[in-house]
Length: 281
Image (cartoon, rainbow, N blue to C red; front, side, top):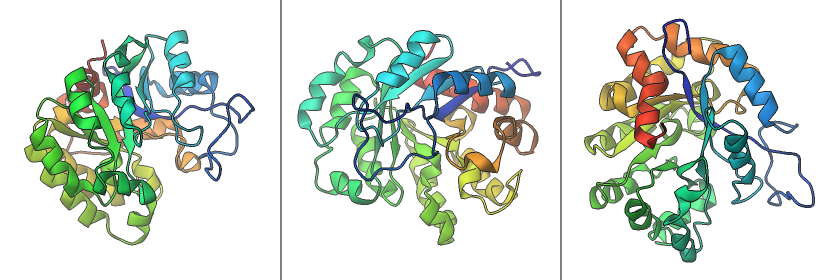
């Protein structure tokens, strides 16, 4: 809890152990850091930065497994919860969702549609997920740069399904090509659906300036103006662009450097909103 008395909740952090025979990685996938990012390291960084809770998003390189994130939630149930990975290409995965929340610490699902994974959206292979998640009462976080328009019919057909756009739907290639504004255009269009919300996360990753990353302020403001404080979430994706800032700077970027956010707005964006959207008590 920071000096303003607000609860600070990071909407996305990855955790992972070292690769081992019982924890193999997907061939060809590389982690965001050369060394493991362990539970104990994250807890120490959170304490130093004044972050109360984190939503653990299991990374892609160990494959579709959630065990280490759930271990964090078991060890620190008041500090960690998980948005779990699920094998999208397997329609039988739908059977898992009815009992998904029976895993202690599990709050919902996180899926990615990047590069070759985009085909899962166009082929219909992922169509099973939306009604199954809606029926199970599970929020879905998704990263789908370049594919945001495909989510308008999904949001419309499944009004009871909380859909959370990750990282303002950005990726490094979009930033390098100077196409952030166009990507935000598509994100803003989805704000008309009340079940859609957005993580204002990983801003330093896409910035070409040092702290406080002023070239990102306009894009953050556009998302905030479209979605409002109760549908926007601060998050770090901390291990991405890890060397560009301290954890504390990621906090003060929002609490001190974005003048368009009122103190009430910060209460929501920095924690209240994501807790409410995920039903994390």
